Length: 60
Image 1 (cartoon, one colour):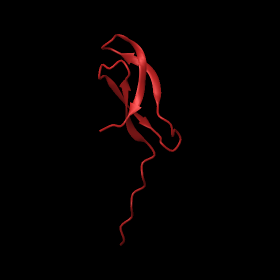
Image 2 (cartoon, one colour; image 1 turned 135 degrees about the vertical axis):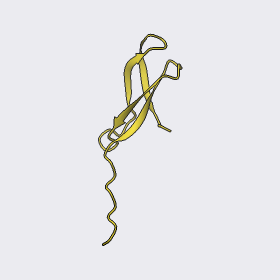
Image 3 (spheres, rainbow, N blue to C red; image 1 turned 90 degrees about the horizontal axis):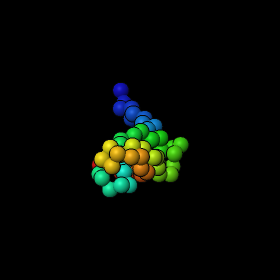
Image 4 (cartoon, one colour; image 1 turned 180 degrees about the horizontal axis):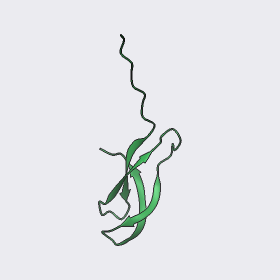
């Protein structure tokens, strides 16, 4: 009757923050085993009403 440790989840949640300095962000899932570098996407920022680069930061 021993305790069995749960497996570590394959995906983690990360925050994609706008480079337009609006404070707008998306929360996405990432598999750190497959994608080791930081994510960078062009996504829509409604505060500046255009597509800008969003970079991965740590989700607090």
